[in-house]
Image 1: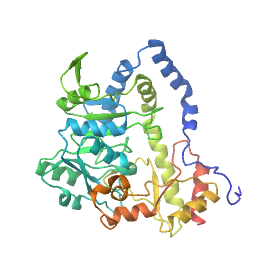
Image 2: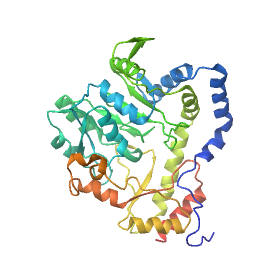
Image 3: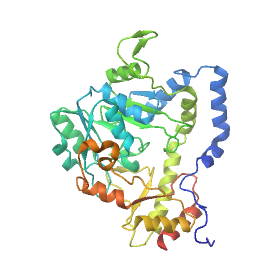
Image 4: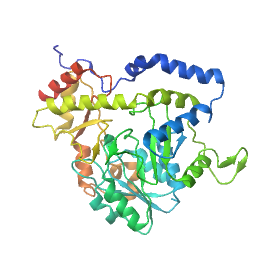
Length: 372
């Protein structure tokens, strides 16, 4: 197929409508079940999804909340983070990670990342820890596990809990266990484009700690211990019944969808030979779920323009690191503070990646990249 320059995108970066069409009958039946029942907040669907998702991750508890950002926010509060504290996290994360930290009244203490994995560099973590550090928040960026063993060891030695940000890591593993099963707690997002995505906002916190789970259930629902009895100050952050019903349908298919993402990644890995393109590395310690397939190119913007001219969609995740965002200027960290995060932000480009992408479409992406 010949695509004329400046033609519209024919291979989208993502297409959620394809996924819906493939499971429409089950999705429609699940939503109808909720509508027929007439109970829309914290009911049977949420309880069932929480049990099923906890079992999937391999932990004792899952607590459904209103979004992935709220999952981090409430997990930090449940772990004892309070105003004036600091939370150590990766410098190249998406802004919602640090938004959640500031929601808790704390300040982000940023850590530069590893060149190969895009994730927090454990060798640079201790330098960011102070007497005010009350949590460590590694981010499993793009669906690849951060190197958790040294991070957890530092947390144990310093008496600082580790909270995993698994917003992009559904089903990915580290040393044989699924992400989310390592820290004191872990936060998941169910934003529609995630590997496990709802039809709106949604999130969950998972934990093996009974006390943390109890705190989270109170925090998400105004601090209620039981109806109209409030034992702590809380929030309104509840996963609704319709989203839980949708997620239950999708959870049954998540492993297959992740396998398909890995097949597409294999097509890219084997097919892309352009020496200007640096392909993502998969760490030996775990399995990547390829929420995103992110390449690096020194002429990233030119590459994106070229792909667009060939009808291939792409996105940049993320063009500005946290410390250079205007909203976080109070951190006082100028360009040069986190050189690897900055270089990644200047060079990264995400190629089309979703389970319904065909082999033929993936090969067309390969050809477009190689022709740059």
